[in-house]
Amino acid sequence: DTGVSQDPRHKITKRGQNVTFRCDPISEHNRLYWYRQTLGQGPEFLTYFQNEAQLEKSRLLSDRFSAERPKGSFSTLEIQRTEQGDSAMYLCASSLAAAGEQYFGPGTRLTVT
Amino acid sequence: QQQVKQSPQSLIVQKGGISIINCAYENTAFDYFPWYQQFPGKGPALLIAIRPDVSEKKEGRFTISFNKSAKQFSLHIMDSQPGDSATYFCAASRDTGKLIFGQGTTLQVKP
Image 1 (cartoon, rainbow over the protein chains, first blue to last red):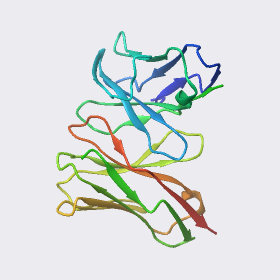
Image 2: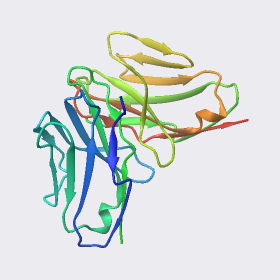
Image 3: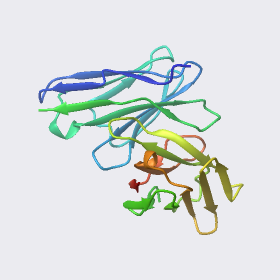
Image 4: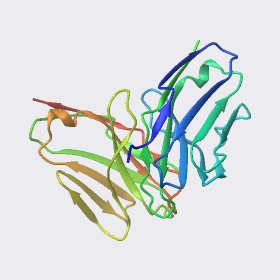
């Protein structure tokens, strides 16, 4: 069990560019969650998948954000036309649907200049 | 109704002392209450969690106390150590879905 992994760990981009992050969950976990955390705050829910189905999206997730989990394994989160307000830590977590315990990855730190 | 309120915002405790962090919620549909520990630059790590059918759960030096009628729960860290210095988050969820996090408590344990 290697835990949840995320790639890249850090991303610096210029305003207006598109970025894509990847999350690999714990292998047997069928639920995958994306959260965003800004400095000094708790993580905020963005979206989650059960297998390949996206079951819920937060109102925080504007039209510039899109997430996929095409084969029910890894997931990608894309941000189009990045803005300075998108600068944050993007966290991925996974769980078994019936269990509740969510295990987080190390996060991707995004800085938009 | 979706909020989870956490206090205090910061806490300083002497080594060997007891650290206590409190959380309150409003949504009575919440049925799972975890606590996470986060070090700078790292993702949150699950510490301990409780469901509303029990009033207390203990794992090592960490204890959750749960008061369903008051809609409050708390984390107690016994024999606090400098290595416990971190940010702690409470959270709540319904039907094993998304977590709603508190604002966090920064704990400093002085040697």
